[in-house]
Length: 635
Image (cartoon, rainbow, N blue to C red):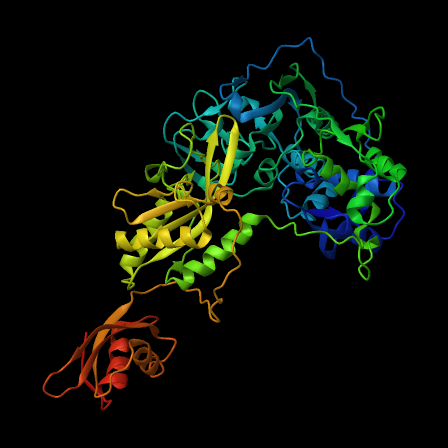
């Protein structure tokens, strides 16, 4: 977000601090100023706005924050326009109410659209926006000022009968700059009977665009369901100034103020007159949230003396309404523009932010109180299980929590009333649902093991599973195990129960139909354990993590010796001869003693990785074929 310092001072006329001071303060209150550059004689700040601060994607939101910090009033000139309510209504139709939060629109006739004045051209260029004409440029000016995107249609081209709806078939849409888009069925659009006029919150269309010959225009300002805007923008691979803002949680209550300023500017610069009443679709009004707030909590959280008086004044400066005191608690209603404030902790953060993070000392402890161990017991259990299973020969894997709809494994351990949780903006359309069982992820991993020909596949994962019961969303830690030998899997589970000293009746395990996968909900297991044992296993010195991009290549070699030795010593000896970056594993698959020669034959199976087949052959021949105690080598 770019901010022209001189324009910011017009909204905060009492701002007397230097640009350097303001830039530093903006950074300290959370809007990191990444650069300060000169443009057309003005100083321009480039700010990094956090995802939950959609209100600060406009001058008004930034000014509100600085107003709270400096206790300065905001100045906005009163719009010189009155909206008559006795004129004809715009025949606008909204058929997808769940996509729309608020739409305001009006028709202006008798326009004399002209090229933009120099001040407006310069202002837009300072924000990297090209000038089109006065009407279009003023919609962009208001978007930058208030952070609310708006749009204008040529009423003679679009007709008054426009509709906010969705496509019922595949259609072609041409944007204002001539880009052609193929729209899928169900895309959110603005249209008339003939064609799509715009992609709401993303980009306007060519056929209804405003030009210098436009005499009648329908101007509109809208806030939509942000998930719908994001999905369509992502699907069509479009990112615009409008979509960037409408993907955030914006304030519908700010719309009338911004819309009145837009209409006033258009009338002042392009003449014309208002010929319809204002259309205002605002069915789902913003709910007012009251938060119980203890003004002494910011001091307790920050560990520094912040008075209750300062806490209340800081919140009042931000526009919060503070109710009558009840004991030590004040009911606080945040301004509707601050969608990121929903909890008492959010109010505490606001107070500390305005008091100044830089005032918290870094060279002394916040408190001398010695707190007990606050680490959840389940994390100790997870650490123990990981060490135990790795020492038992299992590989730990990490997998996506997202699965396909057909991969939902219901899991015997979960409540029968559970429902899957579908994501609203999944990063991959093929995997739209959060897993309900860890086994579904292990099955996917097994397929990868098989594709890369990994030997002795035996692995586990400890991660979360997700489901919904009624209106509650749940996430639980789960342990998933895979062993290709069902008997060994049962032995490992029994051994784990024995180490944890868990009654077998309380040790609830879900076994797959092929008896090679097992799942244990750790939240349930924790309840059955009297005390988590201290690990008597050493953590491996090297816990390597690998991402395989090629298949494992396997070759055999027969090693002869007149002395009997252990497989471990054989493996250690020959592992030193193979370059470590290519050696995945060596195993002894057979031991045989020839009765005539009394020699012992050890069959080694060598697994190579990080190389192709030819490279593996060369390494194998170099290491094994030329050694005196190795007779043969085969693939």
